[in-house]
Image (tube, rainbow, N blue to C red; front, side):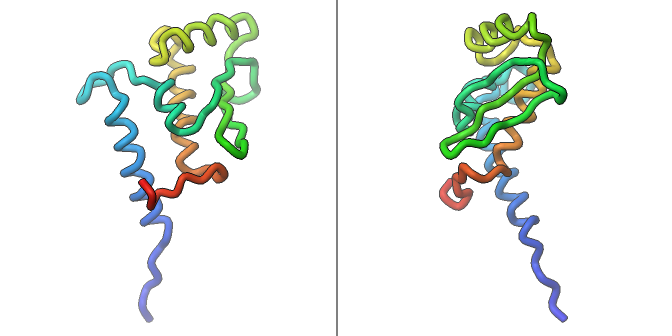
Length: 123
């Protein structure tokens, strides 16, 4: 009996390609670990706003019909400073590593969340 193709293999490959193209446009120092333009990547992935606030989890996304709102965990007294830091330098270079990682992690989730759909075949 012929083996059925797993649709997730194709989907994973498409997402890998999509993520690679996104990363290659916004990594500042190709071939090295350097500040990545997380804000620009977020906008391209239809993240309309990044909110820093106390949460029970490290981060999350609110899915809206036209994009996403990202939530990133921080202490209440850090919220304003983190928001100013991220809006002033969208690499987030002045944010603690945990918040930078959470932003990148949540951007990665946008490749799999529907809606809003941006069809991979159209890329």
